[in-house]
Amino acid sequence: MPTEGKGETVHNRIAMLRAERGVSRRQLAGALGVHYQTVGYLERGEYSPSLHLALRIAGFFEVPVEVVFSTEPFPRIGQ
Image (cartoon, rainbow, N blue to C red):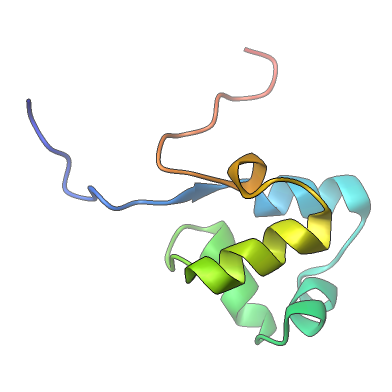
């Protein structure tokens, strides 16, 4: 089975959840105690969160962690 170069990519729906709830990157960062640029890195997949941070993000949005993060790409909305 061929492996992709980024075998440990973590996909997320942070930007979608923020947009749905009208939360800015700065607001989310403030609630989590991280720099707002960290939220941008997470959203773009340039940084994978620790388990603790992933659970805190899910808790902020009041959803199970698997709603926010996945090792597989999320299906595009409308497909």
